[in-house]
Image 1 (cartoon, rainbow, N blue to C red):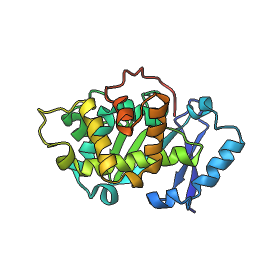
Image 2: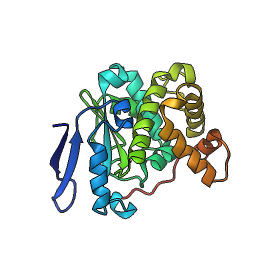
Image 3: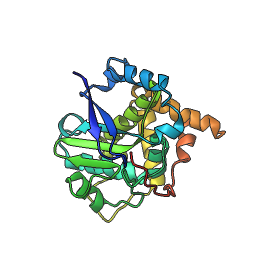
Image 4: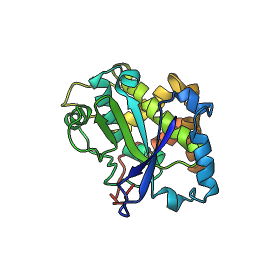
Length: 239
């Protein structure tokens, strides 16, 4: 009852399907108290955990307007703004190229972010808002618990970051002041390290590993890698 398989018409063959899970808390996901762990084990056993096959599917994270954002349109607007402006970091966490089915808008401004938060426009964006649901669509499918937790923690951390915006970033209502990605990524990194670093261990570990691979020594240095907007080539993979 907690996991449902449905048809999905987004694939050209018309034979796609998707799993839809019941709501779970971040803690329940972390403790593997959800059916997703079993699903990913089966997917791996079937050989669908290869990167080329993961590219053919996407992971959509649904967040609740009330529970996650306290029904605040301003917080949702900031969330939309940050996840798009910090495009290089978002695409790195997503694990796949920017696509027309989940478009990350590097040049988003406050006016556009407010339109998305108000449920205006189509759904093929990095974040789609519909009624009580805030859906983050940017991610490649996950076949390991660690991958899934990194994605979920990124969404949760960004949600918390958006809620602390006035204290950590600045006013959201001034449409004449656009924040560049360098500033936002630095503020996001400071937020993670200052507020609840222990709450998002998989996210911190993913960024730390990237830091080590790049020859850097701190999480802050790793985040600097993503401080400029991504130069992305939009692909049309159906996911």
